[in-house]
Image 1 (cartoon, rainbow, N blue to C red):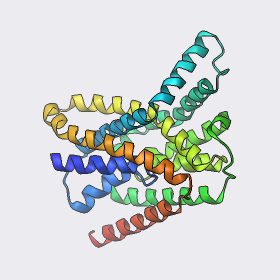
Image 2 (cartoon, rainbow, N blue to C red):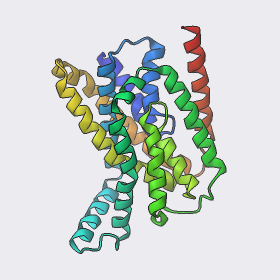
Image 3 (cartoon, one colour):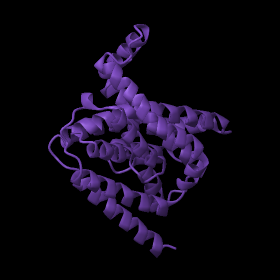
Length: 274
């Protein structure tokens, strides 16, 4: 991977991590369409590291709320009443929502690495994302706010995050759709989805760091990956701000159509070039 490729892919990842169109899918598709020959192991580590950059974007955007949640959770534990505070309760619900994807991601880790090399898997996964977005728009009452989420809502959204283990299924798309199916308003569902991404992105980043230090050319890779990391963090922050404003007044239909159209394009491109 070159520095230019790192920056371009970093920007793409930062934008698509939070828009419901699959960042991991785009990180497979773009090199495939442009003919970039990036080693699978190197691509996998880069893809997860730029997700850590997106983690930085989430933390920077929601830092005051995350700090408040952390303080309230700690105070609740000290007072032996962890669910008495609204923010503390939200914190535990966010943790619950991350458990399914964490467990499945660990179990299927090697299978996921193989999927990162397959554009055709990404294409069909994008169709699934499109279907979830459309389903979310025709189901659910969209009346609930984030402070009305219960344990079943949280687990339901967490189970949908499991789908995002595979590239092409958008994490934000799957979790926002799941929240809307449980009657959450669009911006509230997106807010919960972004907050719940913090633990899973952190775990993925630690895993990628372990993979990175095992590689023989670690110093060269860090110098190459760093520009992509920075560009991804900046693009991610902008993407969060834009999407939350967009969802306040607009549906997910545009993103569903984009995912479906991109999927069809990839399948046709793949068949032509077999």
